[in-house]
Length: 350
Ligand code: MG
Image (cartoon, rainbow, N blue to C red; front, side, top):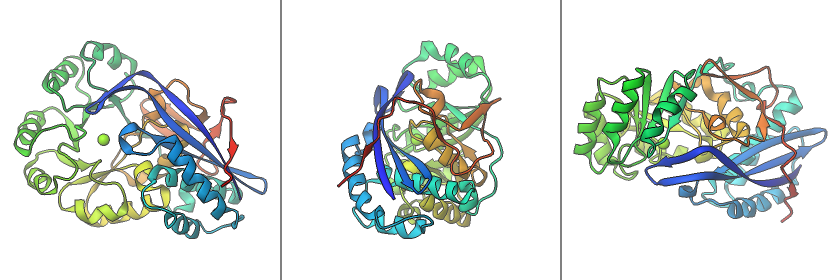
């Protein structure tokens, strides 16, 4: 199997603000795997707070390319993923882009959609939330108009204007809200006050209200919270599930955190066993990563897969948004199709 990669910069339609700061681009790396007549694509999305860079991803991909030379179609995804995970710890997005490309490639070779390879039900169109970022109070009415067809709004809170933002949104719409605090509330007492204030405002869940390592405080808060609490920064991989399962009522599962689809299915099974709600989320990703995440939609209570809606230079097609719902078409592999000629792929020689 041959591996090549392309670095790219996704440009936001609007500056993207959250509790960590504001930015206008997200760096990504695309990977292309070729075997016989078939090609699979994967994506590593690299928001700056997650410690992976294009340089670190490419360095990891070069190591994986040596491993992949020993494999050809049809291969065992589990075997390759286990071997890849043993190369180095962390590198979660780099591992995810390989995992996605492997599933895409195998699906294409077997003429099957990836959800079938994973043993999952065919995803039906599903309402996705769409993010309104903080720091743009005066832009909220325009932004709401722009995303009128979407039924669920994701609101980034965690600064001094939290109540003003919610009040401003509620002047214009009663749509369901998903609140993401990104660890921004200072302690459990403040968080409980805020959640109680939000409890009659049609909020589906509260994501990561406190700092990621405040497990005991989160357990205290989740016990008292009238709104479902969901772990994001506190939960990266399957190995975190035991730790968070008594502290939150749900998880935000992202392929870039959990190293891809193979591990995502393990996490979903565990979460269902423990009665945890599941949101499938994303980083700022193009349709390549989102088409992969969408394979999991039927297992989720909610999805937050708005990545392609927020960027203006998406190099992939393969998913559609219609009447607020994300849908996969009749597909093989992940369904992602490279549509841009801008990407320059380099062979990933070690
Ligand atoms: Mg989040």
